[in-house]
Image (cartoon, rainbow, N blue to C red):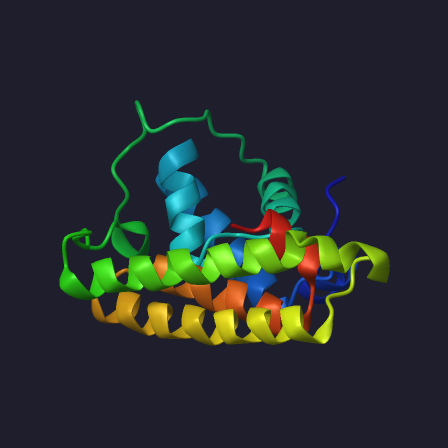
Length: 182
């Protein structure tokens, strides 16, 4: 007998916001109806959530697939073309001036975050950042938000959402997740 899916319970079990659990489950249902495979399936879920998945959200996606009895093969080949809300939006151009500027800003901010987290001065504090490095990370988070705004103007919504999530993780001070979520 299949377990009953309760969004609130899944959200509590995986420490993921309930709204994100709902969007992931809806995306998996839609992907199953359309018979989407690996790559198109992943794209559909990312567009529903509005960014790349992070942390336990992958586990929520896997559990939703299992609950719905959906095990598509991997890769893009042989997969039907997505329709409706899973259809790919028009491609944004990496040559768009705002996208280039956003890429440069995000690259610099991510480098600052990486250096601040890995700096020698942080080791004696047991994973905590000293105030100077924390200020650098917070400033880099603001820069990530600026880059996200520019990406949105260049119609790169998933990339913008991913940068916003990374900025929020930096502001919360979850440096372990930040180090793994590039």
